[in-house]
Length: 309
Image (cartoon, helix red, strand yellow):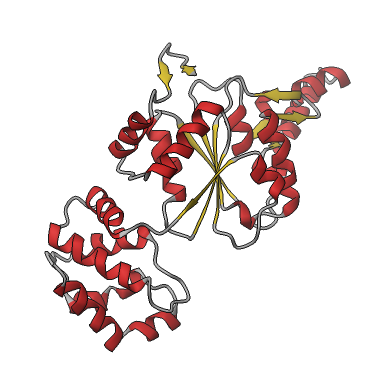
């Protein structure tokens, strides 16, 4: 499958699984085999990809990496409770319509049929993320990220069913808008609630685990190239140990990256107990977690991380 730009450029999907993983690697995203296979099939089959996993394991960043790897535009819809069509799909620019109506009236050109045709045209249509992604006038391919779908209401899930099945939207004043080339759709969920099975059935599904030590270390090296090999290994080992503690909010990979980046900014070449205590708030985001870890616990975890080869 190919997309054609307005500039006559052509984008071809990766021809193989290894090609896809290599492209993601160029964007500093380390995908394991299972995730890469799911993404490859989503591209080949034209199916949405539904990603679930704890916060911070790389669901959202995958969409950004894929968009960059395909030279596509990333269009993001951040879900939240109360999200409706006017914020997700489209709405009319009523202020501009009213102004245009007054201009037509002053010019003596206010005829009912003509006014309706001019006022309800593409010029006054505000395209929200879902409509932007399937806009047939697009000159670039799109990756549509529907982020944290579990935060939206179930009614919004129902609306997505038709969109994901047909890649079209009906606007009463204009008619049906259908994508010429459907976007790659990636949905994410942190499982704050269960997403309906009807939505999942329309997607390829992938659960993303917290990474192994080896994978997380590879991610840290790719994302924080300025970190010394020793610091990267020790910090990765420390975060892996933290995840085994009884915490209210377990740190994700994004927190590991932030922590290592902070220590590099502090000119640390190896794990430093004092710097760890000063920057612990980068990875632990609740008062309870900070209080439970500070002191002997973090001290012993730091000592273990420094002692292991």
